[in-house]
Length: 125
Image (cartoon, rainbow, N blue to C red):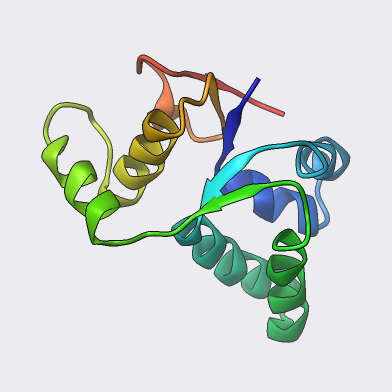
């Protein structure tokens, strides 16, 4: 089963929190995310850890894993913008949702309740 991993789950895997192990285990499986999630995660990890170099290492480690990282390009952005107004999602979440749709993900793994009530179900780690 293919699933999309949101930035808050990636951040959770690399910061001290109650869900760190669960988030880390997901990143050891085959998953889908996009480059925008990686940017969001890098910023969040850097803020939480107060260590930009650590945050960069965390994100770079995902390029060696079993995840599939979709590039945010003009086509993905265009497809996402076509959906603006059809779902109650901000621009970032529209891009993540469209990535999940285009990659045929069965679920979006996220703590973000904005992904509720979409054709792709949201689960938490």
